[in-house]
Length: 146
Image 1: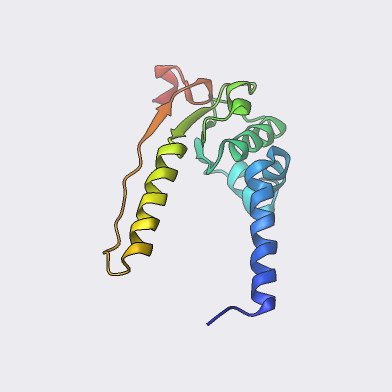
Image 2: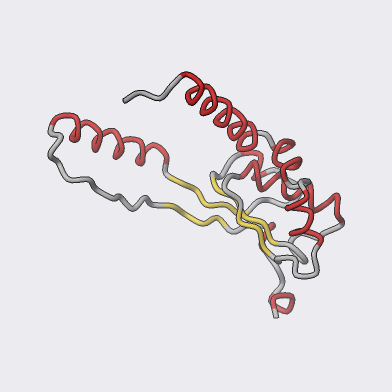
């Protein structure tokens, strides 16, 4: 039961759009300029922390906060995922979760090969290791968190 051509093309288009947001801080910044994000960032009940899916989205969030006059980390703490170089050299070094991609890829390949060799092998859930690298983007003074 294969998907039709239109479904495949739609999936590719959506994946390309998502990839652009995940890899381009300017695209992430534009995403945060949408009416929904504006409402979130400018509302009376604005959050004091953003946890972004990638470092690039977090950098875009930093840029958008700067445009809105929101002080990092005093008014908004920002965290990403990926420990990218851009996050390390941002105006405020980005707090991030460092994932162990190589180990995760090897584990995934091993599971896939096991499933291919024996389709009766039960599915498995793996817990992947990570490290939280606390940097300037979440480094509030203790008195500011109260």
